[in-house]
Structure formats: structure tokens, C-alpha cells
Length: 236
Image (cartoon, rainbow, N blue to C red; front, side, top):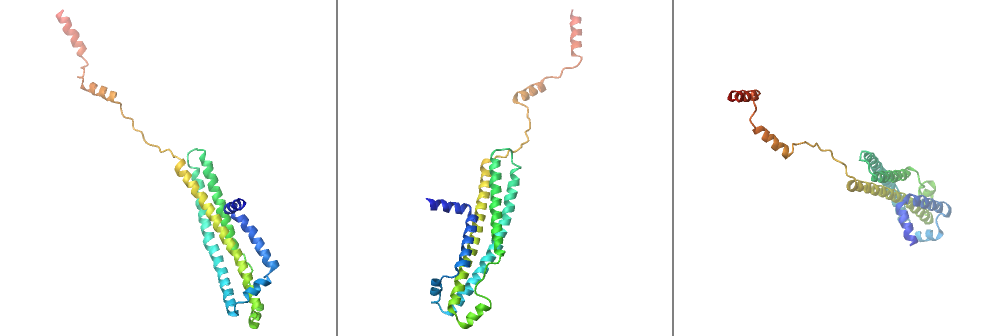
């Protein structure tokens, strides 16, 4: 149960675990260096194979850094702008208590996406690189397999830090996108924007009937009452 809770917490706040795991891994590399048992196991490979594996790890480090910077940073910036615009549009909605929930979700989405961008910017920071320089060339001339085994192990370990950084940035980006999606869904299903319509007033049926009856009546001449009085006087 405890492991499940930690897993959920890590998925919700991956940047906390990234900082912790990064420090622990770098401290292990700097203090413990390469264990003798690992060097012995790696030394089973030929010198050419060790050199090939070292070149692969160098190439892998470059690809991870490029992916983290170009993809994650660009996507996080674009989604941050989108979430900010969504939060601004909420202000245009009619007064509703759910608006505060939408604003909160959009704000948290922006926070997660900005954290993803900050983590991805960490790829611009120079991490240690093992297996190059004069000392490495001297060991290559002497064909010291133990040296190649050592630098290969250290390069693999430092690439794990790169992998953790890339994964953490992706998780933060994912959480931000999910929060933004939740805000949009709530806006679609729970917010009803009143639509103004032009109401044209028409006369009622009774009014129309009265108007029709009034229209069928013969017009009364202005002097008709005087003529009636004159005829009555003559008869009398």
C-alpha cells in the first residue's frame, strides 16, 4: 500500500523525485566511482567492443539532450501559452462558481508546464563526460581494458541522470496537459453561456380579430349625426 502511494505521488509530482534521484546518482558517481566488481565484469569484453560501447553511450547522451531541449521545451512553451489563454477566456464566461475551479485548473496546468520547461532547460547544463581527453588516449595506447570498463560504467550512470531528467519533464508536461483537458471538459459540460436572441412582438390573436372586425365596419361620416337629427325634426 505504501509503495502504491509513493508511486501515485511520484506520478503527480515527478519533479520532486527527479531532484532527489539526480542528487543521489551524482553523489554515487563522484564518491564511489566505479565498483571493482563492475570493472571486472566489463573487462570480459574486448577492447574494441568496450570502445564501441563507449562511443554509443556518448551518442546516446547527445540524443537525449537534444530531444529534451528541442521537443520538451518547445511543447511546454506552446501549451503554457494555450493554458494562459484558456484562463483568460474564463473571465469572459458568465458568473458561475465553477469558474474558480476552471481558473485553478488552468493555473496549475501552467505551473506544471513551466516546471517541465525549467527541467528541460537543465539539458543545457554540462554534465560530466567520461572516456575522452589525453588520459583516455594514453590508456587506449596501453590497451588498458580496466580503464575502458571504468569510463563506460561511469558514462552509463551519468546517462541515467539524463534519462531521469527527460522522463520527469515528460511527466510534468503530461500532468499539465491533463489538467488543461479537465478544464476544457468542465467548460463544455457545466458552463452554459446565455445566448441573446431578438424577440419580435407580434399582436395576439384577440388583437388581430378586433383589428379585422374594426376594419370591416363602415366608416362613419362626420355629419351623419346632424342628418339624423334633421330628419327626426321634419317627421315631428
